[in-house]
Amino acid sequence: MFEKLLKDKTDNTLIQLFRYTFVGGIAFIFDFSTLYLLTEFFQVYYLISAAIAFLLGLTINYVLSIFWVFKTRVIKSKWLEFGIFALIGIIGLGLNELIIWTFTEYVGFHYMASKIVSTLIIYLWNFFTRKYILYNKR
Image (tube, rainbow, N blue to C red; front, side, top):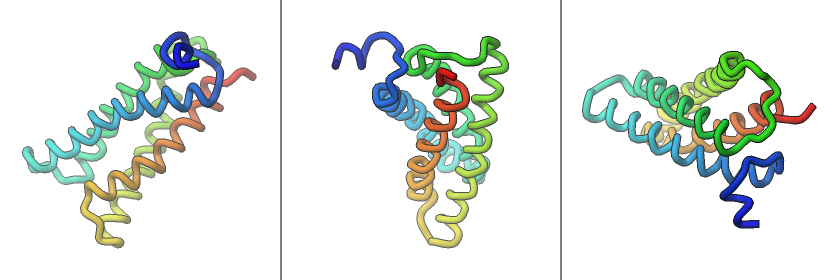
């Protein structure tokens, strides 16, 4: 079983979720680091930093997902597939911004703590939406 986790792509949802967690973790490191660097060192407004960081994470997530996570690809055109993948991500970005803003401005969390809350919610949105729209046998 462990070899299966490391090797070929699969249609097994639990293995995909495990891999997507790993891939998401890599994308999150880039996302979180970029948010912090842009906001703290370059003095970019935190919501703009969050958007830029999110888009970087989205791109990393897509590339790693198609190479390692999802076996079945419903859409043959890679450009269309990326467009839908990105659209799901943009909806996620809107949710990300709303959650970060809400938890920072109304709940009183530090923007980095708000990002952690947002990440957990957006992670589930992205995986299940992408799995069932883009990478699921019909």
